[in-house]
Length: 340
Image (cartoon, rainbow, N blue to C red; front, side, top):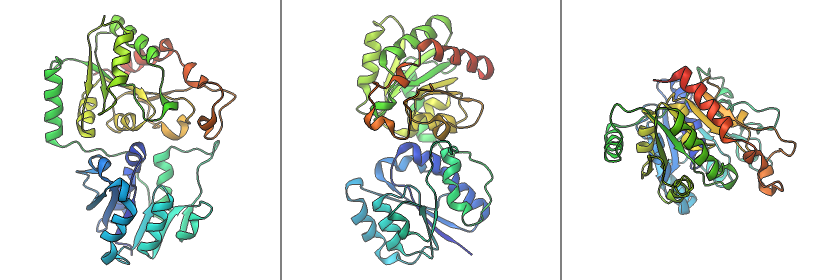
């Protein structure tokens, strides 16, 4: 019987959130199991306080492979199962090195030889929700899956700090608000700033909700551009916050969340917040949660194909085709159905 598990999910904010059902489902099947997760330092907070994880190995991103191999040199052969979530070249090498009896990863051309159990990559027209797809890694071991519920646990300190930030920013404790994250490190996921400005104008003028724009360190320029386009006419809070859990805490108290396809929208969905996610060339069937309170706004275009964003010749027409008016209708629908 399997007892010790090593899960490799070093990076990709959204992917880490979507991998959290794996931890819970392993514990559900094997309550005595010990789960160790390896992750980059900057993403560690996403999985901290998770009761289904026993140990976290967080390492420097630039020296990931060397640090990891050094830290686990004495533990080689000590894990019953290694699950390589992303199946990157570096993590495939680590999986091989750890030498677990069970080594699970994707069925990629060369990397598949580092594993002894593997499952196929997703393709268009065969696209289950990513959190469900990743659970195939434990289905290979005949484990039962209870749900694709994602798990984010906000600690009390982060929550208190977040509420203080709101108070200093002029948001009253009992005030209803909508959070918006118009950011992404991927250019092909960025809905135009001018569209966000027009959407905010409609929300501000027609709905009685405070609006809070959120971003992480180094991303404030997105909020500045949107504010400039609105001409300073509207009382919109613009907050640059250092700490994923503090941002999550602010989102957790919102009536609705809006944003581009990315990690913060996955967190909002995980917290059961009504969420609107704006999709460009990425496939909403893979990246949008299946729950009713999670709406994907996406346009069908003839030029869409797998990884078409790498050489798009249509100036991301799929994103620009989504209008602020269309998104505003989705805002009204979700608020009418789920408003707290």
